[in-house]
Length: 440
View 1: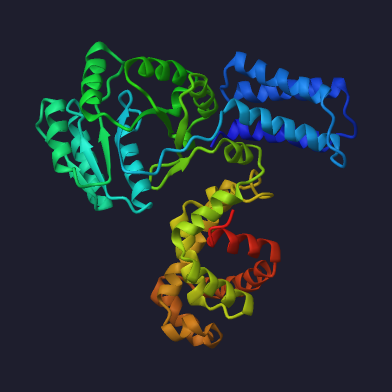
View 2: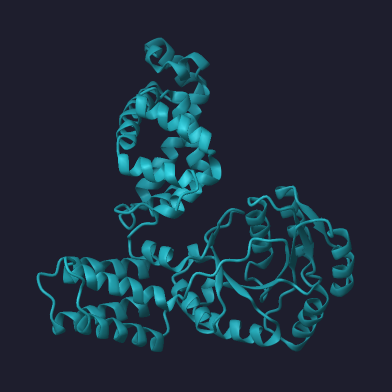
């Protein structure tokens, strides 16, 4: 996500960290580096100048608290000012409601409706998806398929020609669900016909939230789109999609924020779960390579119960860690998402991840799962019994080699030691336990 901007800003922080002294000349150079990084990340020129001048003013006027080195305070200033550009944290209310999505053609609106539905499903709400895009034939089928995937309610009229009539029928059909998510039509531009249609839908639906979906690829043009839609209907929040595949995300985020439309989520991939709450402090932490351990813990919380976690932690810390446990661990990590995203959330590792090595690791872990699928229950629970004859049988059954099986066993022994060491880290263990018990 925003790799060029991220790497450029991290380089600025590395320079600050290595400073032997700080004076006006040094601050001026750091400010120029920040400007270069932001412009490279497609951030608006005037906004870049405003941010960098504020960094310069604070760096020269403020005095660090007692005990804090000046260069650490300068990093704090840079972090705070970039966070300020992205605005405050705004979260979509978690309650029974009607949500209307709007946006131009090709922005990822229909997929995003599915992601919103999934988000509320995880919070134990019943959800209904309502298809009102009568201009794109595939939109009905796409939304219906998403509803089937989520096992959620759906209403649409495949050959319907009147969005308002479909809406009236849909509201009746979906009256018993907690959340209704409405997918409206898009156009190549916000023309008079689209504005009229959206206004009619808004008047009848009376949505609690009207969310504008914008593709990050358009960069600074996102601001103009947001302004145009806010003049047409009452936009309450924004979702910026495809943040994982563009260098222009910095432009899109900063441009949208300028029109005072809060960003609720960012889309970080194609899968239904690839929707992140937009939390400016966390986002900037990841951008600057500081990691985001909170989001990582939240991801773990979404797939594990407190009881299961306590049991696993106790097992790991006592050294009773079997191949079966390791297999379950791999499956859990697989559910959390791509390995590079997870590693990018860990302080100290964020920004140092080699994509080619990660891809190689993921392939290896996939092979390891095939090998373990060919093992007996006894072998999974007591790996010590796996000798030459069993190694050959397992290799043959999994379509791998004896060398691959031995590599898995070595990996298991190493993982066992590493896991035990991590659980011996009292601070990390307490943080994990606190998170899963609902602490702050």
